[in-house]
Image 1 (cartoon, one colour):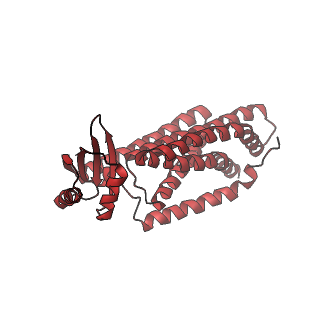
Image 2: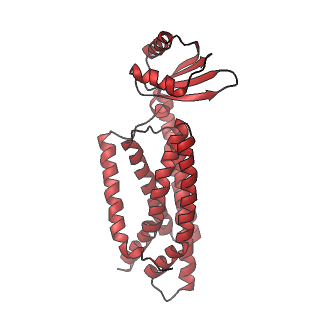
Length: 290
C-alpha cells in the first residue's frame, strides 16, 4: 500500500481548522452563545397523562400550531397510559393555562400529573457542574499522557485536538438550532473520550517507532505511524458511524440529538487525530530546535 504523506500538508489542514474555529466563534458571538436548553436556563415542566392514543408528533404539532415558546417533549413509557413531559423555556403561570386550553379545545382525555418551575439557580448549578466535569477531564488527560510519554506536549496537543472537536461540534449544533442540554453534554463527553483515544493510539505508535527508527526524522516517523494506524482508525470510525447513523434514523428526538452530535463529532475527531494532533507536536519540536 502506498504511503500517504499526511504531515507534508499539515499547515494547510491547521489553517483550515483555524478558519473553522474562527467561523464557529463568529457564529457563537452572533447567536450570543450556544442555544442552551431548559436544563441550563430554567423554565416550566408539565407532565401530562393521556387516557387515549396520541403520538408525540401529534402533540408537538398542536403546541407548534399555537406558537408555544421554545419547548421540548419527552415520551414517558408506562404500562397503561401515554405520558409526556413538556418542557417550556419560560417561567410564567400563563404557560400552564395556554397548554391546558390547547388540550381542552382538542377534546383530549388528559390529566396534569405534575407542573413546576425550574429556576435559574438550578440552571447555574448544572452549568457549573458540566464545566467542571469537562475541565477535570482535560486536566486528567494532560497529566496521564504527560506521564506516559515523558513530555507534557503530547498531552497538550491531544487536548487541543479534543477541544477543537468539541468546539466545532458545538458550533455545528448552534447552526442547526439544536439545544445544548444534559443529553448533548453526555454526547460531548463521549466524543471527548473517543477523540482522545483515537489520538493516543497514533501517539503510541509514534512513540514505538521513535525507538525503532532512530535514524529517521520525527516528521518521517509521524507519517509512517499515521499510515500504519490508518486502517485501524478508519475501521473504528466507520463502524462507530454505522451504529450512530442507526441511532439517528431509528431513535426518538432525544436519541437523534445525541446521535447527531456523535455523528459530526466522530468525523471531525477522526480528522483531527490524523491531521492536527501529531502536527502540533511536530510544530512544537521545530520551534524548540530553533
